[in-house]
Length: 153
Image 1 (cartoon, rainbow, N blue to C red):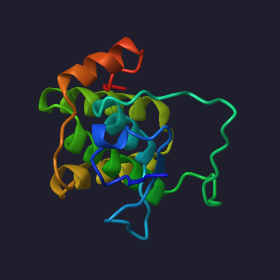
Image 2 (image 1 turned 180 degrees about the horizontal axis):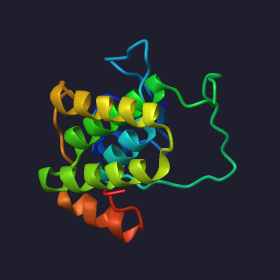
Image 3 (image 1 turned 180 degrees about the vertical axis):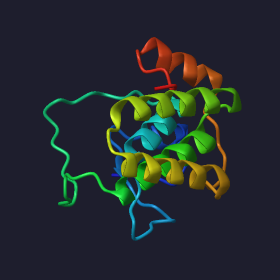
């Protein structure tokens, strides 16, 4: 069965097999971890012409972590969301997507320390390298919107 690393481009040459196993690996794995890798992979799969099947019976197991929200969680979530937008969204959608997430974060986060860490991560995401930019096509934006998941939320 073909294996596809998450840092590879998803393209038609992978579609010859009935099944493809997606091996999620990251070249830039840090000790602090990554966030939003599922969204990153889904956006790239849709842009490559793949269909995404929702499987409610599937159980995803993450390494055991504390469910408590802490400064590193807030910072990494914001930084990686900014990086993902900068890497994968058409330039016109980046401020819309990030503006939406600023508003949602302000509405949802009750902790001043959490907000401080989140905005620190947001600034870090703006001013540090996000990796190679490969924006999805506008056709993909339209397709995602028709599926009820516009890439602005």
